[in-house]
Image 1 (cartoon, rainbow, N blue to C red):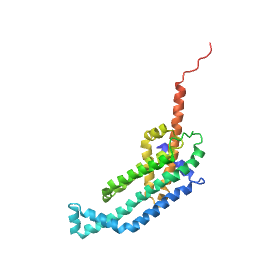
Image 2: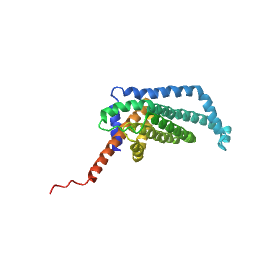
Image 3: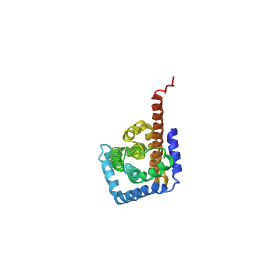
Image 4: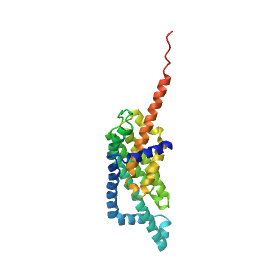
Length: 256
C-alpha cells in the first residue's frame, strides 16, 4: 500500500509539469464527445431493445405485462443502468487513447525527470503498446457484455464495472509504463510479481471514473500513476538484484 500511495503522490506532483496536463484532458474529452453522440442518437432504440429483452424472460415478462407499476419501475431501472453503462465505455475509450498516444508522451517527460538513473533497455515498443491496448479493450468489452444482466441488480453492475476497469488499467498501463526501461524478461516478469498491487491501484483509479469532473482526467492520471509505480518497482528490483550479485561474489583474498 505504501508504494501505491507513493506512486499516486508522485503522479499528483507531475501534474504541474510542462506538457503533462494537456495529455490528461484530451483523451477523456474525445471519448466523451464520441459516446455522448452515440447515446443521443441511439437512446430510444437501446431502451426499447433492453425492455423487450427483459420482457422475454420467463415469469418476469408475464409480471411486467400485467402490472403497470412493474413496467414503469423496469423502464426507470433500464434507463439508469444504460446511463451508467456508458461511463465505463467512455473510460475504456479514453484509456485506450491514453495507452496508445498520451502515455508514451508523458512517459518520456516523467522518466527523464524522476528516473534518469534507470537504464532504458527498450523491451517494448509502440506497436506492442497498441496491440496490448487493443487486446485489453476487447477483453474488457467482452467482460462488460457478459456482466450486463448484473446491471439490473442494484449495485452489482457498478461493482462488476469497477473490477473490470481495474483489470483494464493494470493490463493496459502496466506495459506502457515499462516499455522503454524494462528488457523483455523484466517486461514479462515484473507485472506478474506486482499483479496484486497493480490490481489495487487500477481499481482505485477505476473509482475516479464515477466522480464528476475528476473523471475527465481519471484515465490519464491512472496511466501516470502506473508510470511512477512500475518504474519505482523496476528501480527497486534492479537494486536488489545488484546487491544479490555482489553478495554472491567471492570475497577478495589478501596477499600473504
